Length: 130
Image 1 (cartoon, rainbow, N blue to C red):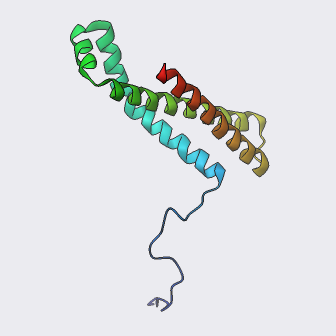
Image 2 (image 1 turned 30 degrees about the vertical axis):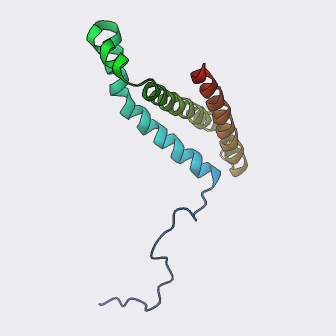
Image 3 (image 1 turned 180 degrees about the vertical axis):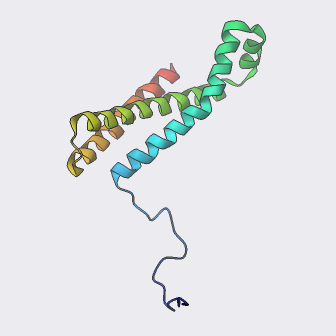
């Protein structure tokens, strides 16, 4: 049996990702996954730096040769990813242990996580400026 394709397909051919508006709960979930990947990718570098600080004096020369802004930006990225991942993980634990999976509670908890994260990022920026 041969399936015939319709002549006028109503599905979009090119998706414009800037016009797609995600719900806040989807944004929270996607950011949680992205920050988890960022933390896993940064982990070997952080372990190498920790080894260099603890055991190898030549590693300190390499780190001191890097520009200061590069170290600050990388530190800020790791700290911000860690902060968001912790907050979103606590949100998931809250929903798992309380059993409240209603749409209202998930939307409110998503806004709380994003708001706390932005406040926390503001304090991290202030801390890095000092």
